[in-house]
Length: 427
Image 1: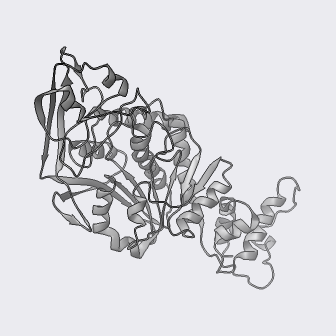
Image 2 (image 1 turned 90 degrees about the vertical axis):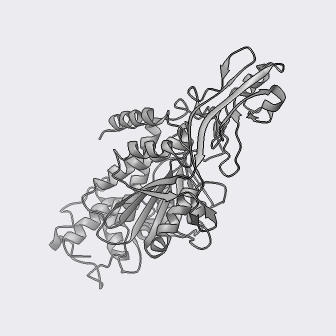
Image 3 (image 1 turned 135 degrees about the horizontal axis):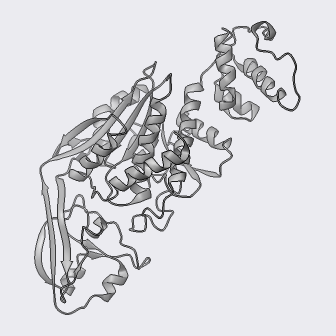
């Protein structure tokens, strides 16, 4: 699929997913997974409210149908149907006439961005509330009666998540993980699931795969904790590398956040690809402020999981506000993120400790049709030297990433040489 066609397809799914009011649980998550399942054939899992998962308990299921405030002069504001950020996520039902003073206890604004609606949650403390811009709040009359109305349910139900396992020729695994629990925000929410879904398509189309790939779509934190409660032991045994996809759709440069295991394969591959990509990028160390890498890298698991982003959470002013919208993101940059992750996968698949079957002196490449009849100094010499370099370091103990790093070039430049040498029985 050409880049422009892919951009348009991603945008069409974005437009369908954007209006859905997502949270940790409920119909919004299920509707989101339904749509993403058109791209990724995922298996669905449900965990009942009240289930103990490690140190956490799965919360009640929350669903909301309507919410608004009526001002003393009869205006309807903070309407859920206009923007689902207007209601604090997990708000309990309410239908009351209250004063401005009482309303002020249940309204959240962001004075530093007076035109923006903030995103606020109350997952584990039962309360209710609304969010609005600071400008709107300051314009409201202080006298008179306000009606606050939230039609929601908070009751025993389920937490839902989806997983797709794409088998390879080995049982060694690569993980891609993203979250599906935020309402209408573009970079902080929808970019991750969309990039991951279309990344799945790219990997599924590969004719051969060494690795088995897991794709997880779950509510952030509690969803991944529940997921690890089910498969954590298996990941400890089989996972070679993993990546959390979040904030991957804005126009910023690429940023890679290392795993807590600094020299793990996930970090080595990411830093290698980015180093030779020609793209502006930044590499940052692991820190607990972030997303689900905190769970994957928790002390008991300490899995080799990092995160490739564009502008990280909290580094852009639109983060967790209504300004994180379609205008803020770029579908072209989302495709670029997908392609960068594909490069990660190609290096993962290509990387191995190859052994040159001719260990004493150089092999006779001409007899195997691997040596050119003549060498153009401007075009062929580098390619030939890459081949000779690869065979010189193919000792069965040095992996391809290190071989490429010694040559100060990308491991992807050895893809043809690996294939040709394997076809000739030379490695």
